Image 1 (spheres, rainbow, N blue to C red):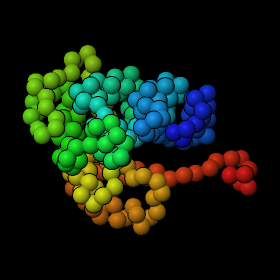
Image 2: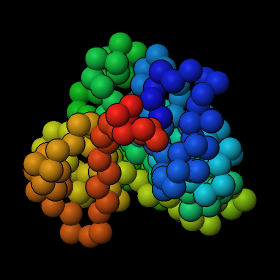
Image 3: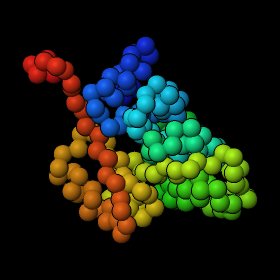
Image 4: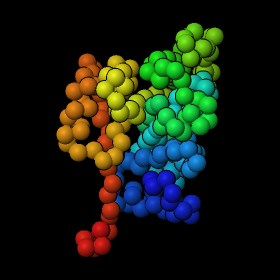
Length: 211
């Protein structure tokens, strides 16, 4: 979904994408625009089968335990229809709100290492450099039957390698040419199944000339 799409066109846009046969709609969370979780909830509720991806939620924007509450709620209410992407966030945005860490790689690793077990209902004890949880666990009534994939939205070689270690997939920002995708996969070098989601820009119209 375009981040600046007028509000009264957001849900019709998503429903039209479903009518046209698109498998998924991705929503973005950019500072100063709309929140990713709220958009995802609205799109999921207004469509029947569309898979909705959130890309991306900056790790520094939400305490991981409260992020888990929101994600688990969406996954429970709309089982098997949500993908969640976390990442560093744009450095200048995160600095402007006082949430850019000294070590973005360490922060993201700790965040994903905490988020996944929380969504599985595990009791999490983690005393990291940035993420600190002292016996936090989601109630059984809040656990989803289908735990969503946790993807990482990252760019640099070290961040891509980290994604290959800890995430279920990687989201690449647009434009993604084949050369970029191949280079990214080389850095990711995952040893288990790992999805690659590529953002690109498209124009769809019944008239090819208009598109």
